[in-house]
Length: 138
Image 1: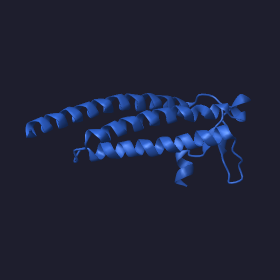
Image 2: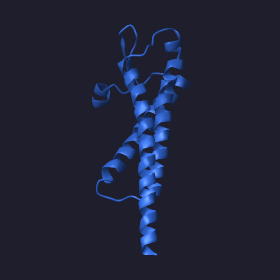
Image 3: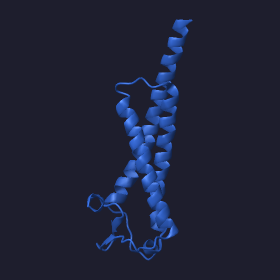
Image 4: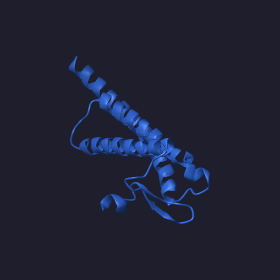
């Protein structure tokens, strides 16, 4: 299905073997943690993306931009914590390495962090605009 095609819940070892987790697979605590962080990253990132799309036609208050910036910080942290997968027993025996997807994950972590900093700028701009509007009303 689509989940298998996208590579969700499967991985490729350093020796090129493809692994897909069946329903009977027993996850280690590190592996389960990494999966939860990947899911959290996806949800928070999609939420931030949705706010950016809506911002093209809706003027959001400064507090929302601060919340989005904090969400992006959390997304950056969760993206980095997906690498907890490398603490699993499989990786401790040398079956894991930094492949293409790991390098993309590192890049994503950096870009989430940059997005958070840039969103702080949007927050500051929205706050200044709101203060200016409040002064004009007085």
